[in-house]
Length: 183
Ligand SMILES: Cc1cc2nc3c(=O)[nH]c(=O)nc-3n(C[C@H](O)[C@H](O)[C@H](O)COP(=O)(O)O)c2cc1C
Image 1 (cartoon, rainbow, N blue to C red):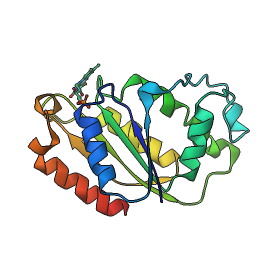
Image 2: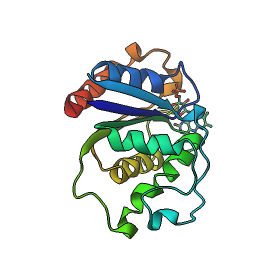
Image 3: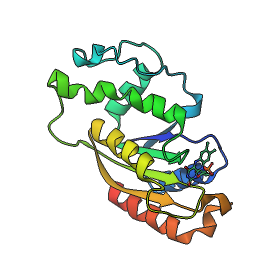
Image 4: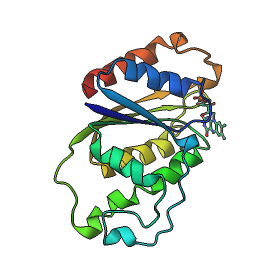
């Protein structure tokens, strides 16, 4: 079982990575976390090369990421909310998933979801209606285009007052539920 996780946050000692590590601890298999802040990936140029080829015209670190996504059985995204969306470095990488979306144009979309996945998000403020709407839509679509069936999502509001995941037993409980669905 290959588990590929994308971490989009700036802080390595923050709540988002703590949630991701807690989820990964529950899963068995070959695990890898890709830290989007460390990636050297250029933005999509909408050149439309991928309308005709199952590849991207830009040959950078995405070449490896496409291969890892293709090989993964489980895909997880973990991101803090930055201005109602996901952090920029993760967004730049996900825009390059246009190569997957373009299966619509190429006519080679896979027939059904072959992977399982989930996303975890944190937001600094207390919960309000649209706090996770922007980021949630982006990450849901990133799962869809990578042929990944979303089993669920965990959203941690009020994250700016949390210094330890142990302070949020209800979040840990939700992560355990997601872990069981991913198994
Ligand atoms: C650039 C930036 C933008 C942010 N925008 C939002 C926001 O729109 N909504 C929100 O609830 N929190 C916002 N926050 C707070 C972060 O979501 C919060 O600090 C984060 O969940 C902490 O995650 P971490 O502990 O993994 O770093 C923002 C923080 C930064 C740095």
